[in-house]
Amino acid sequence: MLRQASRLLARRPILAARTRPFSTDLPAADATFAEAWNKVIPIMDPPKTPLSFMQPRPPTPSSIPSKLTVNFVLPYASELATKEVDMVIVPATTGQMGVLPGHVATIAELKPGVLSVHEGNEVTKYFVSSGFLFIHANSFADIIAVEAVPLDRLDANLVQKGLAEFTSKLSSATTDLEKAEAQIGVDVHSALNSALTG
Image (cartoon, rainbow, N blue to C red; front, side, top):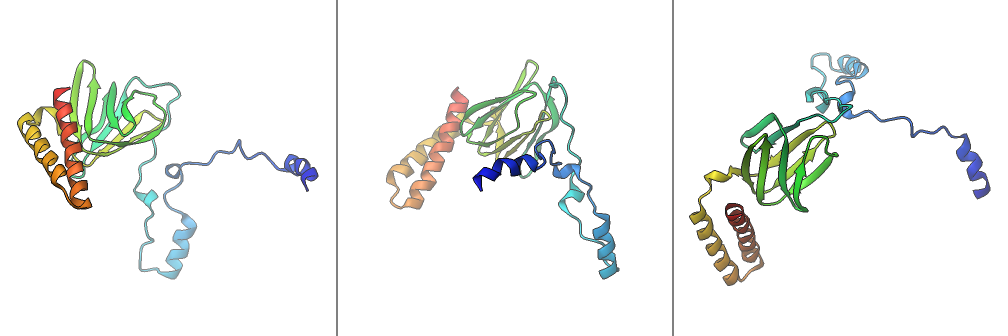
């Protein structure tokens, strides 16, 4: 069998040259499915697939663009929508991560910390609690945060008070649940404190 392997492999066409299309590059509706649906249930419209709701993916540019397009969203609001910026720096779980135009496609988890958006000489800073960063190959970045506050809206006295409160709760915690809740409070307030002092 092993002696024939090279001969069998030589006969197979090489599939590496064929590329698989992205889901957003495919047509949104399948005509044959719609026809079959209408034969079976003529009084109802065919169901929509996720592709029906997606916009086509912007093409990957042949050269690196001069700006990074950023979408920064929260569950209840959109902080930045298709904003062109020079750079963003995010607090990833692996460390501070700078994103410039042309960055390799990446997914990163965010930890509590400062997210800074650089546009020319202007820098806007937000404190984010957690979330995810999606960097696309076409110099688009999507930042999805659970909670975010502009850094200039934070009160240093309340942060210090919260840090002291959660530190005392952590030292007096008796159950695993109390310890976990207090540790989360300490971590977030420590990150808030270092964001304000650093």
